[in-house]
Image 1 (tube, rainbow, N blue to C red):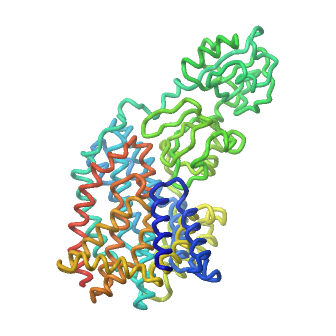
Image 2 (image 1 turned 180 degrees about the vertical axis):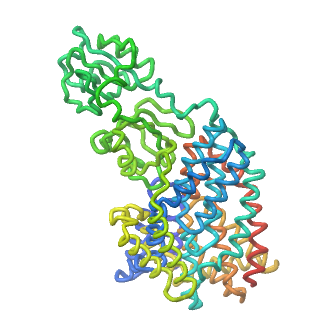
Length: 590
C-alpha cells in the first residue's frame, strides 16, 4: 500500500513539475507533507533533508560562485572577450568555451548571466543576431557543469547517494574523464554547426543599441489652461479616457519629477512624460484637450533629467517578480521604476502592461534613477542586457577570491575535509575578507532549489524504502533482459535525459538515483556507470526552454520559439548519448 501511495505522490510531482503552474519548491513541499500525512515519513524525519550534505554543499557553492563574480575576475574575462572581431564563429567559440569552463567551477546560471551582456554587445557591434550566440552559451553552461563535483547539483546529489550506498563519495574530478569528453563533443558541434541551425529571430543590424525603439513608447504633453487635466490629480488621467496611458515623469518649472505620486495635482504649464501607442495617444489628446510638446527635448533639458536612465533587462530564474504584475507589485512605489514595455519571445507587449504577468526570460524596458536602477533591477531579479561597462576590479580582491577558491578545492581533492565543510569555510573566508557581504550571501543562495532538494530527498528515500525504486528498476531490467548490459545503461540514460527536459535537474537526480542503485543490484553490476549516467543525462536538458534555467533565461533576449530548441537540441542530445555511453563504460566499467 505504501508503495502505491509513493507512486501516487511521485506522479503528482511529475505532473505539476511539467505543468509549471506552481513553483517546483511549492510542489516539493506539498509532496513532503503528503508523505508525512500518509505516515510514510515520520514527522521527526520530515525535514532532515534540509540538513543533508548535498543541500548544504549546493548552498555554499552558490555563495562561493558569487564571491568569484563580485571580485571582478569574471569582469576581467568579459573585458577581454569584448575585443573579439565580427566573425560569428569566433564569437561562438570564445563565449561558449569560457562559459563551459566557468560553469565547471561556479554556478552555471551565474556563468551564463555574466556573459549574456557580453554576447549581446558583440552581436550588436557586429550586426549579427543575438540568437546566434545566446543559445550556444546557454547549452555550453550545461556542458561545463558535467565536469566537476561542484559543477551542478545532480553531481553533488549522486555523489551523496554513492557515499550512502558504498561509503565512498565521488571526488572532485571523478566526473572529469566523462564530463570533459562530453563537453568537447558538445562544444565542437555548437561551434562548427549548431549555431548555424538556429533561426535568426532578432536582426542585430536593425536594432541599433536597443531591442525597443524608445521613441515609440515615450511622448511629452503640455498642460495648457483649457486642458481638462489642469487642477486635477494625476490619477484623473485614467478617468478621462479608456486609453492606455502611463505617467512616467512630470516637468515643473524646469525640474523633473521622476515617477510622481498619482495624487500630485497637475498645474498649467506642467509637461507630462507619458508612455502610450499612437491610437491611445490620439484618443487621450482629444478627450483631455492636451497638446504634444512641439519639440520633445524638454525632458533632456530639465534639471534632474541626467539622473534618469532607460535600460533593458531580462527576468532571471526565480525572480521575485515572476508570475506577478506591475500593478500587484506596486512597481513604481516599491522599486522606484517605470515599466515602459515588455518583450516576450521578440514580441512587443504594450497593452495593459500593469496587468501582464511577468515570466522568466521576459525582456523589460525600465526607466529609473541612474544611481539606483541597478539596485532596483537586482531587487526585482532582473539582469541588465546592455553593455555594463565591465570593470577590471581590484587585483587584490581577485587574488583573494581565487586563493580562497583554489584552497577549498585543494582541501576536497586531498580528502582533508569533505566538500560541504571546505566550501562552507570558503564562504566564511569570503565574508571575513570583504569579498562578499552578509547581505550578498543570503541574496545569492537560490532558495527555491534548496527547498526543492530538502523536500525531495525524503521522497527519494521513501521511493527506495517502500520498494518503489526496486519495482521500477526490475521493469527496466526485464526490458533489457534480452540485450547486453550496455543497452540497459543506454535506455536508463535516455530516460533520464528526457525526464530532465521537463523537470528540474536536481529533482531528476533525486528520483533517478535510487532507481539506478536498484538496477545495478538487479543486474549484479557496478552502480557507478548508472550514477555517472545520471550526472551527464540530468544536465543534458537541451530539448526545451523549461528543462533548465539557462535555457529559459535566453529565450526572451534571443527571441526563441519553443521549437528552436529542438533544432540544436536534438542533434546535440544524440551526439552526447553516442559519446557518453562509451566514455562511461570505459572509465566506469559495469
